[in-house]
Image (cartoon, rainbow, N blue to C red; front, side):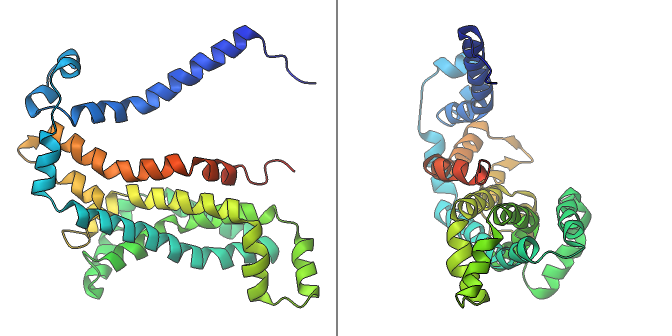
Length: 276
């Protein structure tokens, strides 16, 4: 029995949706406004901030003071590299758990997910010492490895969910036609799970791009991504709100643009298999 949607209910839902959307987007909008103000106006009252003059002074200062292209390239290499490495590991693992499950498969999945509940600071010292001894501190390779390990449980879980929605009979038919394990995964399973894998890739890139704890503790200058770029405008002398806002907009703009243009693929992947 379908529920009748009255005009009043529809209007209330619309208003509520807009209110939630504005509440979520407002911090980004306020940072955007502050980035076009002087330091004096940035710390003034909200009304003065809104009606004071607009300037590109903070952006000019940020670009002159910092090597933005280096931070940007580090973020791209680290996020894309960790995503590709995670996929290489997660696809076979999710395939095995989805189509060749064992008695402990659910326990393994729960154990993998439970590692996300561990506070990162609890393993910072041993990982820092290991990276120091291996010469991986302040290196892109080191960050690619650690971000892969951090996001791997989520990627395996998502791919496992998507793979479970694919009928096993299709894979059995492929085996009967002579397909080996490689052909089964590459030419049968992967094309059918493209929407889910696309959303997994996008989500992992976003998580890696926004990761701050490990990038701030394991890098200094050579491999520092945009999160380090933002943190450089917080000093013992205080916060430079206008410059910090400008740096934040320059750091989040690429990932916001990517998310905007790929939102259809992301939604399609997240709802993959929801309706049969």
